[in-house]
Structure formats: C-alpha cells, structure tokens
Image 1 (cartoon, helix red, strand yellow):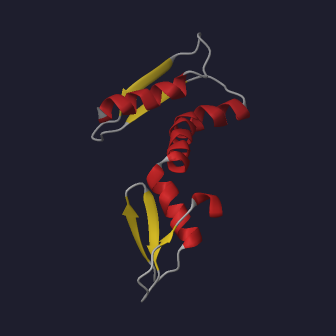
Image 2 (cartoon, rainbow, N blue to C red):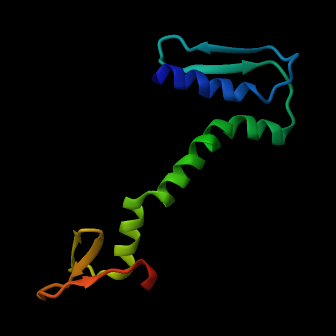
Length: 113
C-alpha cells in the first residue's frame, strides 16, 4: 500500500503539465523512492503548485480531522476549563473534572467555554 501511495504522490505532480509534455515517473536506484520528471517549462506559480499539491492534499484532510475529532475536542475543552492538578473522568455521556483534594464533581460544559 505504501508503494501505491508513493506512486499516487508522484502522479499528482504530473497533472499540472500539459498533455504534450513528456513526464516520466520512475524509481530511484537503491532507494525506495519515486520521482516524477518532466522536461517542460512551467510558470513559477504553477511550478510551486505542482511541487506542493501532494502536500496540500494531505494536510487539508489532516487539519479537518484534527478539528473535528471528538478526542481533540475533549482535550481542547479540558485545556480551557480544567486546572493542571484536576482529575478528569467520563460518567455516561458527560465529562467531569474533579478538583485537587475535593470530592465534588463539576460537570464540564462545552457551552461554558
């Protein structure tokens, strides 16, 4: 699967070249690395996009995942509402913080942020 992803990565570099450009995707000798090479002039801005497209297509889903994942959301709520010495627990569908050296539970509300 890793090799397939490397090839897709290199293919993404090729889509900004016109149809008449000769683009070669190949494997580097003695390395598990692939490269897309083309002998064709690209404008500077298009060259930047061509180089960064695989990275941008990978980073956007990562950012969406990080900001929409429940675990990341829970950590952000704890960072905003709990003290460093507090303990945290889930009970049923609720999240609670237990202040240091106290026995009472305080419900953490996402709306209180």
